[in-house]
Amino acid sequence: MSCRFECMAGAIGAAGSRPEWRPEDVPSRRIGNRNGREAGRRGGSAGKQGGIGMYDESCLNAFLEQQGKLFREPVARTPEEAEEFLEDCMAVICGNLREVREYFDEEGMDITGMSDEELGEAEEVFALPDGRYLIVES
Image (cartoon, rainbow, N blue to C red; front, side, top):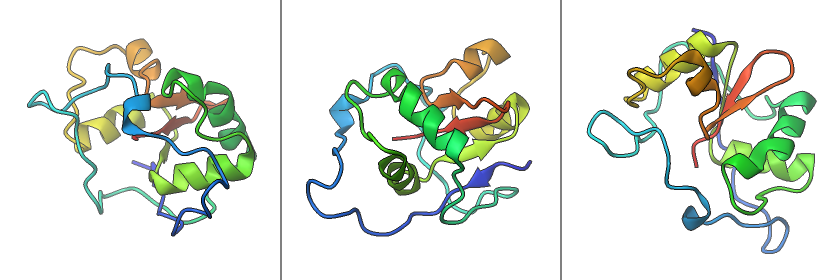
């Protein structure tokens, strides 16, 4: 699998430098793990590559345009804020829906019975213009 696992960039900027997100901003309909709870992130998953600054312009712009499907209020207003937010929540970029499915399966999320269309439309999944997918777990 060639998903890229993004690393945290470090401390969040000074207070007021970007809008802060709160857990209550996240809608309740989420992909859960097999025990009915929201799945947590496991470190060191095989096949994921990562690093700071791995989000390209199309990825940042797609997140800025689509963030409303995951958050009630914008968490970023500029590409710089979007990159900082994505790094903070260790967003993952996958090359196609098969890799998205593998990622969720590795993370223990219950996607049994979901079609590719449903998976691509999940709140955590952001379609990128070049056919890749960004997964944002908040």
